[in-house]
Length: 205
Image (tube, rainbow, N blue to C red; front, side, top):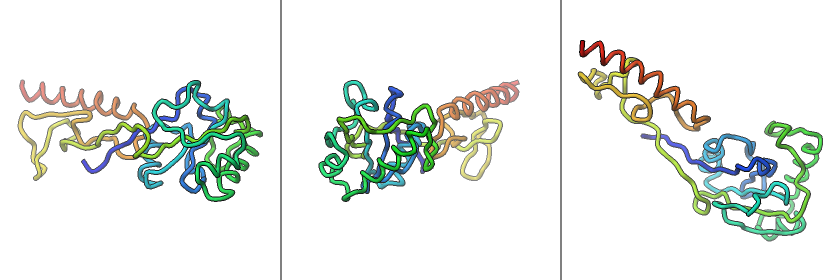
């Protein structure tokens, strides 16, 4: 069990996807519409566990964030940058670049879908903490029993263990980190579950 995924949800609701995720240097590092586990993987393993979410009045949650602490709030991006402790000018440049292209329905950096693009220009502006030691994360490991394509479990010598079958998240199957979609686990357990059932029935017969 040497891999796993960490879930870092910045949505729903969908309006929040118009905000941006930035690292400790005020720089964007991923698309905000990514699957929750992709965002979590990027924060945890590529940003040393530290990240923040920047939004305005229209991209904020109706009642604020329910699992990420509010770091700062301000009526200008310069003031927000200073209050949150980002390097001078860094957040302002990131937001200005994002806004310039978002106004045209484009995201040259991470290609976020046009439907989620709108400038972050309506105060109040807010910074939420996405860091792994501040926000709420849920996670689970990847790995488990080694199996053949038939679902038959093998031992450390790659020998079949008679009568033992496994599928889905009890096995070292298809899902790996970064975990890009829950459907991978569904496909893994249903396909290999049928295989295991087929061969287990044949073995009994």
